[in-house]
Image (tube, rainbow, N blue to C red; front, side, top):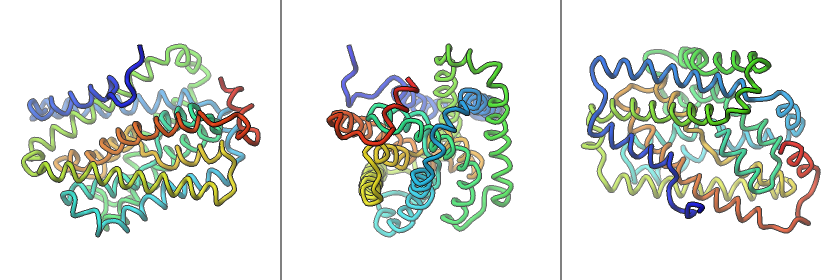
Length: 336
């Protein structure tokens, strides 16, 4: 029996449980140091596994559609930051200053990989192009996000400049990804047969990072400093931001003359923000005491985008077959 559409999945429930655990039993002292080291290790393992999973054939299949990729990157790294900055006078009164810092950080993040591709496939979009754009967005974000954060917040990363942050992120995320991709001929087949391993590390890494981040924030007084009206305001803010982005990407795809498959890819890849990349980056870019409040907008936005895009993907999927144009469908079928 399938789960009702609007009920949270098991991972969302686990995420809530971890936040509750960190609120009542936060990691502190020497234990917090152990949790931090474990978290860094499991996140690096995650990017190693993703590097081993990504095939060069998938990249080559989608890389030729440069116009679509450019506009996805524009949506992710230009449109989102501009919206976050431009809407600040209107939306910032809804939340606390640290929360809006988190909103600006969210706007600077790369796109998700798994959910963007999954929704594109569900909606019968251009899957190879989605694979290429979402994967490239993750790698590009390692370099671009710290720079955008410095511009949007008019400050450098914790304890140093943006180059230091890029170097640290590259060592923890990019290097394991490259090593994993180099080892793909040896372990790629095993990982394809054991997809549950990657999913376990994927979700486990987020749970560890959320526990570590919220523990530090709770010890610093996160919940005492976060009024209930600000939490409600944050939900409203995330809904407004997502609605504006979905509207602009849909309108832009049609104005640019993309077919329906490419429109779907632009909408789903251009509107996503990655929690897998975002939370580890927040640990590098911000003081530990403020990370909890800063990643809270990302966590809420992530859940809202999943629920809204699930409905939107089903709506796209119900369109008649005659509306499919171009060569996207053969490529999708070839990847199944």
